[in-house]
Image 1 (spheres, chains in turn yellow, brown):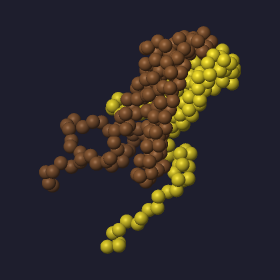
Image 2 (image 1 turned 90 degrees about the horizontal axis):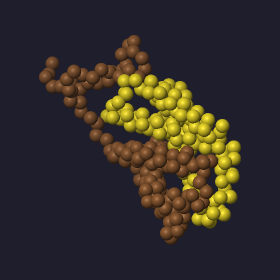
Image 3 (image 1 turned 45 degrees about the horizontal axis):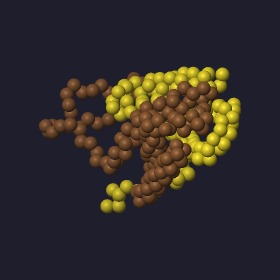
Image 4 (image 1 turned 135 degrees about the vertical axis):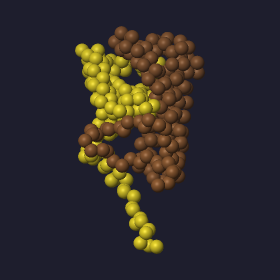
Length: 134
Length: 149
């Protein structure tokens, strides 16, 4: 009886499961898109929380808000806005790719669609950077 | 050989094809037993919220930043914008869809690291409570800004 019982496998530790995300071997372009999508998602959640805090200044009236406009228009903030747009654009386009795959569209060329998402993202972020920074 | 239908099994990638190869569809329907899994439909809710987000965020970026000289509205411009009913609906729709999408997305990442269903359920309720709290705070803040509170 014991000969047919499979051995109990210990679940990997939390640290090992998190380290798995940093493992670049045996990966394909779909994994790269998946990992970038999660990374962008964490950035966007952080921005969402920071945005809610900043918007609370509107409750202080014109003096509370208008004094921030110069800060928001400074170069470091504009660079940050561009990086934020990069996260939004890639996360959005990759989400559309995942939705299309879920519906069965484009599944014959998965790697090509990842390349399309990356290329269009770079093009759109380049346009946004041109508009914002120059 | 018995006459019972044999499920089509994945036996590995055939020789000589590139990674990402997808087998051609069968020319006749084959009944394959699907595994019973309890995945729920939260992924569908997240996908629908993501679709709404594309629309609402697009409106938000264009109306609040790209159409505004300098890209930022002054306080008076913000108040005037939010007092338009359509703009108010668009902003509240953006808030709701972004909170649903972000909350479910964060929960999806927790599924990979939390193995105990009870702990995952507790984490889900905490995320939901935070989302409801942020939504209520944002609605109150909007009311204060437009002078309705």
